[in-house]
Length: 206
Ligand SMILES: *[C@@H]1O[C@H](CO)[C@@H](O)[C@H](O)[C@H]1NC(C)=O
Image 1 (cartoon, protein in one colour):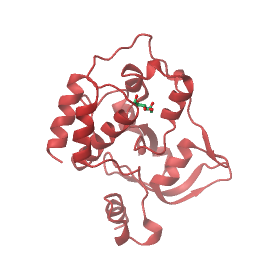
Image 2: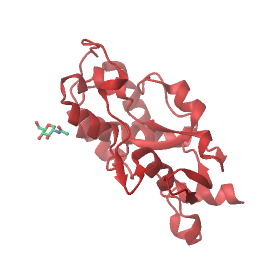
Image 3: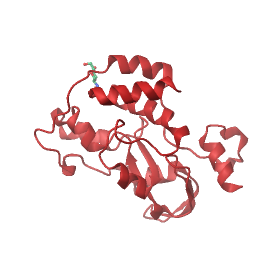
């Protein structure tokens, strides 16, 4: 019952759920129609890992408000009934991971996924950015770029692009592709040809 209400909330029918069960997941991505236009505007290029990527090139997690950093802010945003300690650690709450539909009451079961992975950003353009631009990307709460998901999915995804990994919940793949295109487009990142094919195929089914 609880899980199904949360899934309804995640699907966007938030008005049907009681106020205390509203799930506020990642910012709603652009529509499939806009994503198709943006996709056609992206530069297709071969990825380059020269100079080589290192995680330390992207500073995480910034303090957003009070004692809460970006990671903790996303955990609060993406859950319902989230209770936090004075240090902003989530001590209880209800979450549904949108990538697989799995519900949990344990914040420790969740990772904050960079939807466009940091290494993927690096090899598709962020290698030319300033450190401040990379920090803004890694902590972006405005674009649909950060999402609380089951931790083992985040590990399975790792640095893979959308041609090599999509969320196992088929009904979420359209949202994922729309978000992927929005983020790449906003940040002027390139896509490789396999990525373009994969996105085109997903958007055709939206
Ligand atoms: C992307 O490129 C456009 C056009 O050159 C520029 O105006 C915009 O600021 C760039 N976006 C970012 C996030 O750097």
